[in-house]
Amino acid sequence: MNKLLFSILLTLLSCVAMSAEPVSKSYWGGVAIESHDTVAYHSAEVREKHAEVIGEERFTVEWGGAKWHFASQESADKFAADPLRYKPEYNGHCANALSLSEGLVKTDGTVWEFFGEELHLFYAERGRQRWLNGDWKAYKQDANKAWKELTQD
Image (cartoon, rainbow, N blue to C red; front, side, top):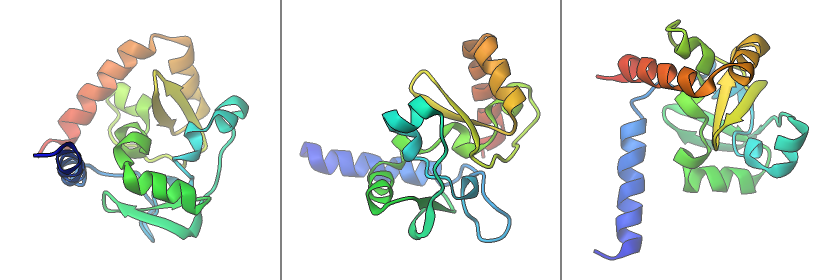
C-alpha cells in the first residue's frame, strides 16, 4: 500500500474513532467551543498575544458531531485536512474539571493554554491558573484517565 493511501486510511479511521467522543458544543446549533477558531490558537501571533479569534458561520467544518467555525477559509481547510492536529484536548471540554474528576464541563473557548504542544481549554481562568502554577503534567495524567473512563463505550 502506498504511503498516501495509508495516510488517508489512517486519517479516516482516526476520524471515525474520534466521532464517538463528545465535543464541547452549544445546545442549540451544535457549534463547537462557542464559534472560536481552534486553528487560530496555533498561530504564533495569537499565542503571543494570548488572544481569541471568533469564527464565522460561513467557514464551517462538521467534525465529531459538531460544527466548527473558523475565521477564514484557510483555517477551515487546515482543520478539515487534519482535525486531530487542531482540535483542543478533550474535544474542548474543561481540562481542569477532568483533572479533578468533575466530569465533562463545557467551555466557550475564551480561556485556553498550550501545555506541551497541545491546546487545552478551561471553563474559567482559575482552572488555567491552577495548571500554570501547579504540576500540569500530573493534572494532565488525571484528566487523560478521566477522559478515557468517560468516553469508553
